[in-house]
Every structure is written in structure tokens, then in C-alpha cells.
Image (cartoon, rainbow, N blue to C red; front, side, top):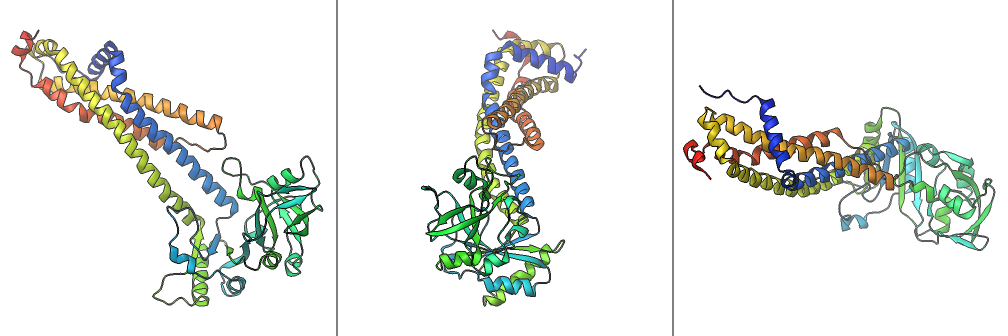
Length: 417
């Protein structure tokens, strides 16, 4: 009478018994599996957290915003095309045309980057040089959902009369006026001119590594900035579309700028338009490259682990030759032997996957503990993928040893010493 086929529970128990009997060998065998799973899950958790933070930051600035610049913007891989630098910067008249001609647009704010003048703020003999100096129009605060900790924002009168006033970020305020609560109304020196601080920005809720670009902001009226630095011509437009009309707004802005900049119908845009969705898409393209690199590193670890599993299973077949012969002699089928060794290989690699998931979670929390500003979020798909892949490695690399064991001649096995 043939031996009844082992049920999965009994097969699993026998596999676990074999693994426990060779703890050190089994641990070293699955080391590659552990490393591969840890790399994938740890990197996936960091990238997922970064993506969530970017989405939150964009939503805080406004999901209906359109960003227009003469150069390509947003996160990207590599440098800009050199031909872009020959493009003419956008002009304030372009903003006026968009506001008057685009029915889907609610408001437009101009930003000029003042890179050509000294951005150092002098106050009582001290100089603060880490600020980001920009000239902005009065609608900038509204378009970007900006809040003030104290004081007021730049107004139309300030801009039209080129008044020497400024609004500063929290880092600038803390550095120049430590332990001072009332800052609005104070005077500082910028580019050799006295400027009155009329407001201090409130810190944004979402940031990278605890900081946001606005924390170091030094904002002065747009026309004042153009007066101080006539050579600073790089103009960025923050354009807010009306609710539910973002795509219509993009199309209208594109049409107006193409017409004003003399772009022919068969030519590409000589300017760049970005939206929140596009910025997130560009970030996803970058993370995809990083993810592919992580998968490549993980694949090496999984390959090494798979080869190790195959090796240990072949050794196990040799060590258990007489056992295999006894089972076949009393009626075990080839499928019983194959299933036994496949289950053993899959359980071995699955245990490596479990250990890898646990270590990846620990690594992620350790990183967040020492770097709380670095966002990390462990995605469920990465955990599930790690477990499935680790079990699949055991299945693939355990086939040959399992077939070798199943094809052994029972007579020769019983004679084996």
C-alpha cells in the first residue's frame, strides 16, 4: 500500500524541523534574501514619504496654481537643454495680458529673482546672507496661500510707489531679531538702502527637513526689486485658475503666451508651464529611476540568496538520501518528494522575507527617529511584494533540488552510506 501524500501542514512541519536542525546554515543562506527585501522596502518607504510630503506642500500652496517661466521648471533628471538659455524672459506685460484676456484665470502674481545684487541684510553691525531675495507683486500672498505671523504683506501702494519695505521669513527674523517678538516696523539695510520690515511670514505646516523655502525669504515689492537691480530679468508667474478650470486656464495661458512671444503653430513652446499634477509626475519619474536602482540592488541580493538556497537544498538532498530511499520504498510518490523539498525551500526564503520586512521597518523607524524631518511611510505594496518575491525565489531555486531528490533510485538510496 502506498504511503498517503503528505498534507501541507505535515510537509510544513517537516520543513521547519529540517531548518531548525541547521539554524546557522539556514540563516547564512537567506542573508541575501534579507538584504534584498530590506533595500526595496526601506527605499520605497522613504520615497513614498517624500512623495506624500511633496503632495502636501503643493496642496498648501494651491492645487489650482499654474507656474509660468521661460526655462523648464520642477524636479528633473539632468541639466536643462542649453538652447533654453537663449529664450527671452517673461515680461510683466505678459501677466497683464493673461489677467485681462484669460477668462479661466482668477489672479496672477509676478516674482523676479534678484540674484545680481547683494542679498545681505545689515542690522546693528551684523549681516545675514542666507536669505532668498525676491521681488513680488502684491497678489503673491493670495495666490500662494501665504499667512503672516505679524504685520502685513506688500500692498499695491508699496509696489506702485517702489517703496523700500520688505516681508521676511521666520529664519531671517529669528537670526536678525533673536528673542524679539515685535519685529514689524523695524528697519534694516539692504543693498545700501534702508528698508522697513512690514511683516513676518508664518511657517508653513509642510516642509522638507523641517524647513521651507519661505523660511529664508526676503520679499520686497516687485517694482522696487526691478529698480534696485535692472539686470535681474528672470520673471516667474504664479497664476491661479478659477475653481474647476485648471486645464482651461493652462490652455488659455499657453495660447496667450505663444501669441505674445511669436511662437509659430509648428514650433514648440519657448516657455514652461507647470501645475501641481505635473510637478508630482516629474517627481514620480525621478523616483522611478531611484526605484529601478533599488530593484537592481535587491535583485543581486535575491539572486545570491536564491543560489544559496539551491546550494543548501542540494546538500540537503545528499544528506537525506537514505531518508528519501526509505520514503520511496514504502510508497512515497515523486510528487510527495518534490512537494516536501519545494515547501522547505519556500519556507526558508519566506522566513528570510519576514526577517527582511521586520528589519526594513526597524530601519525606517530608526531613520525617522534620528532624522524626524525626513518623511517615511512604509507602503503595504512593498511589504506584500517583498513577501511574494521571497517565496517565489524559494519556489524557483528549489525546483532543481526537488526534482533531483524525486528522481533518485530508491535501491541506490538505501545503499547510500
